[in-house]
Image (cartoon, rainbow, N blue to C red; front, side, top):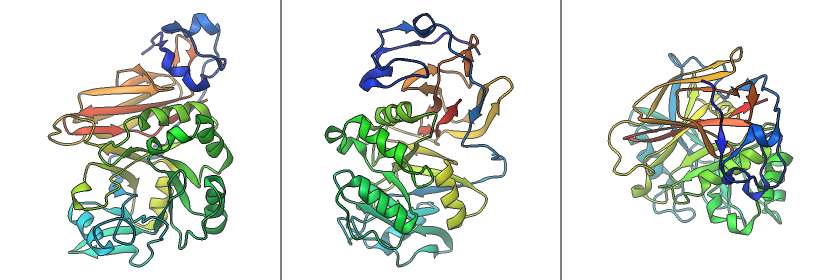
Length: 347
């Protein structure tokens, strides 16, 4: 479906840019084609769901940010593992503040149900972030950048930034651009978009601003986590990883390559029923379109640079022969909550 897209002022606040635009904010309701003239069409789409057969792939429910009595939680690690397993989760990372949980990891059987417990830690610096698949997060370094560098060099761990809304007032957007441009995409993989019951609603906008600033050279994957400190905080926000088997190697690969969706019921008033469910994602590079087949939803929104650019199941990347996108990402909203895709890079 070809559409002329009208973008709002939001798209370029904080000096963010589209493919060919200047760093200055655009006038409100500008027609990009008139403003910039000819913009070459895109030639390829990089999909995080490449090679996934949605008919047979397994879907593993995961939370990668939670706490125990070792830091500021109320339950023991064993109690949290059991609580998540009993609620149907398949993957859990215990990430206490500045203390690695590495005791009872790997596949743990709870009352006949397997749950993969991942080693993890939340580094409590001026900007918090999680480091997964490592044995020790100490010693603490002088700043966030040096700590991330240490975790990667020492442990080859997988990292994502936590609840940026708690820290955004202390850091300019260039802080995020610099971090994601500096460190390898297979290590610093993304940022929390949903924390707890959407504790920081602006994090969704922050994610899109960061994506606009660094794509299409690299991507930034989104995460949703309970950040649970006690039982009552379990269940509002989670990730779903698409792998053949439940093991550390395949789950790590899915995290690093964005083979996932993330969900929350906190953004829907009085959620009832099932979450939206993706049945297939079809990328056609001959026509430069992406099509989503899904159920349990009432609305789909495709965003690029934070702006809703399409509300159909199929999005055409080259509109009237031109490309305005660095990336696109879809969100499904239904009575049970919201599903967020990972970004598709447009080149």
